[in-house]
Image (tube, rainbow, N blue to C red):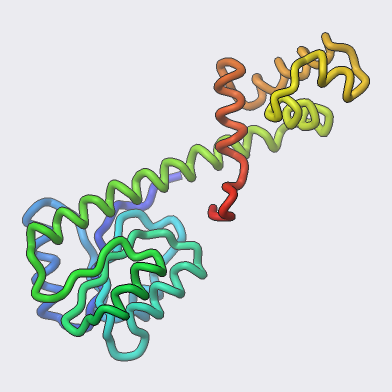
Length: 209
C-alpha cells in the first residue's frame, strides 16, 4: 500500500495568509497544500493523512476549534498548530487542552513557526510508526489458535512453561511447542522480541489508538 504524502496543510480563509505561508514553507522545501476553509479541508481529509496542520481559529462557517474536534472524532491524528490574529488566553488554553501542539499569533515569527512545524512533522512520524508497528503486531497475534493465545497471555503475565502447563493442564513440552509456533506466526526473533510485540499490540491504558 502506498503511504500518504507528508504535507503541511494550511487552513485559512485569508488568501494572502495562505500564499505567504505556502511561500515560507516552500522556501525550506516543506511541501504543503492550502485550503480556504475548514469544510474544504474536511472534504478531502482521511485517517491516513501524514504531516501536520496550520489552522486559523476564526473562519467563516466552521472555525478552527470545531475542525479540531471533528478531526478527533474522525481519528485523524495530524498535529495541529493554531495561527490566529484574534487569539486570547482562554481560546489558546482550550485549543491546547484539546491536543493542539502550539498556538501562535499573527504576525508570527517565521523561524519560530518553521521550528514548530518540524517538531510537528517529527511527532507525526513517530505516531504513524508506532501505529504501523502496533498494527503489524496485532495482525500476527490474530493468527494464533485459542490455545496459543491462552499460552501467550500467560507468558506475557510472566508465567514459566512449568506454571503455564500446570494451569492449562498440559505438558510442559507442549507449552514449549506452542511458544515456538507463536514466535513463528508473529515473526519474533526471541522471547524478548515476542513480548515486545505483544505489548505493542495491546491497547494502551488511556484507550488511545
